Length: 316
View (cartoon, rainbow, N blue to C red):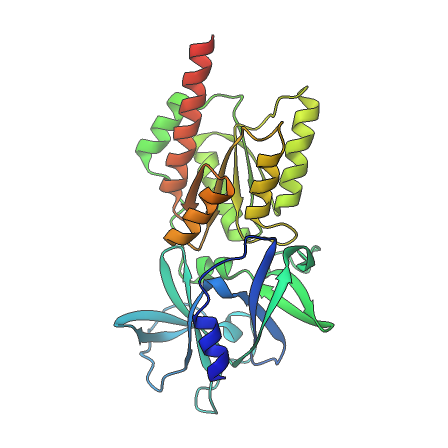
């Protein structure tokens, strides 16, 4: 177990291929779950002392000290409607993870192993049984299913997020947004799609939001065909970690297509550290923005649309 923890804690880079490195782990139902290693800061044995937080939401069992700062601990089993963890029985573990500049701890029964998976081996589930669930994807290891959770949706439901764009930015948007602007976005997280749609609705910008980058790329190609060589989208916003095709691979495909290479492309992620931003630029993205920060997303959108309006006026 110590070797596994050490290996996870030393991970610092996402692969520059369409792959992910995943930590698999167990909850109280003894089924396998998975989480991208890059989201994990550290794995801890659950400390004996957890400070309770009254009326803190479903699954929140309290806070622990992590490197001198309190972090919220969430029992993933309880959130999923499973038998909650019994901290009085045996050893359990906490995955300390970063999501959109915040740090949380996720209580699990025990970690299992590290595996590498191509994103095209990660399947996005479809059907009414999955709608509204916290399951965002499924993959397999030796024919054993691994469930990948929409942790972003879990955090939004438990902790909440302010989806409102500031009044000044909404007012600015009304001055520059024109009916011909159309923004395309791709994200496998239901929470992220809801927030993006809310921000774009507040600005009055036409938008299409899909669940994976492969679909987004097909829409870009289709728009070029229907537009006689002209892409219909003013800009594209893409998540980095997605089933089928990740955002880095999507960016490279767009940039390598002469008919699409000019499009303004923004990558966004709940992993908001500097190295991720640098990798996004290295892959060819025009910008990088953290998730769940509507004003930052809106500023990038308005800056680009404003440039488009200015360019259009100068060419008229």
